[in-house]
Amino acid sequence: MGEHDMTNRKDQNQECPPANSAHLQSRTAKGEGVDGHTTHDKDAEHPALDSRIQGLIGRQLRTHYDQLINDKVPDNLLKLLEDLAKSEVDPEKDQKR
Amino acid sequence: MTIKPSSGIHHDLVAATPNLRAFAISLCGDVTMANDLVQETMLKAWSNRDKFTPGTNFKAWLFTILRNTYFSDLRRSRREIQDVDGQHAALMSSGPEQECHLELKDFVRALEQLSPDQREALILVGAEGFSYDEAAAVCGCAVGTVKSRVNRARNKIAEIMAIPTVGDIASDPTLPTQAA
Image (cartoon, rainbow over all chains, first blue to last red; front, side, top):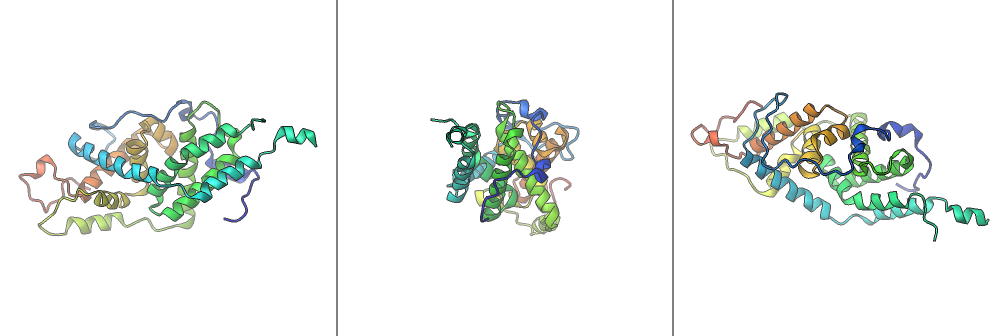
């Protein structure tokens, strides 16, 4: 992408959830741990895996995911965030004009 | 020093970037595509920062924007969904000797063979630690649907990796474990 479009993208509002969505009321993203829990759910189309297998898959999933999280963020993404932050008009500077 | 109104959101965006990127890479399976997706998400989040209520779950809000963008792009480009069933069937008929693949790279390969819905659900719940309720809100579906997708994802991974279940010890290893 070349120039960053700093204007409001009103046409893409539907992909941004409204502020009063129920799920946004929870303060943290920490959820129930799924380690070792078997899922006994009538909606599940398949029987629950035993807890050992679920635990194994969970551990591999988190090991893999942690590697992704620890991967260095490309500079262009961090620069974009800086540019966006700088693009905001400084109210104090505005008044001094 | 003037504190800009959105300096808090800027800080939160920077802090969320590694997770946003990990989620994007898991969804896309492609780092370049994932970086583009994260970039687009950041722009949308910034442009719509007035729609976010401070004190609510910022990460969930970002994740919702990202996955909505991903799935709408997916529908728009009409990309072929990986032939999961075909690949799956090929693996199951690989012969009498079914080695148990427990290496991480095998896990990653299995993860890539899940449908995007299943992979997303598994990542949100199993890797990011969202509750089923939070994950359902991010995905825009019912809680039961998320549970079902997570369960199917785990079952499919177990089958692809040929992880022996207790019941397999006495049974024929060439037969599928449970109905796909």
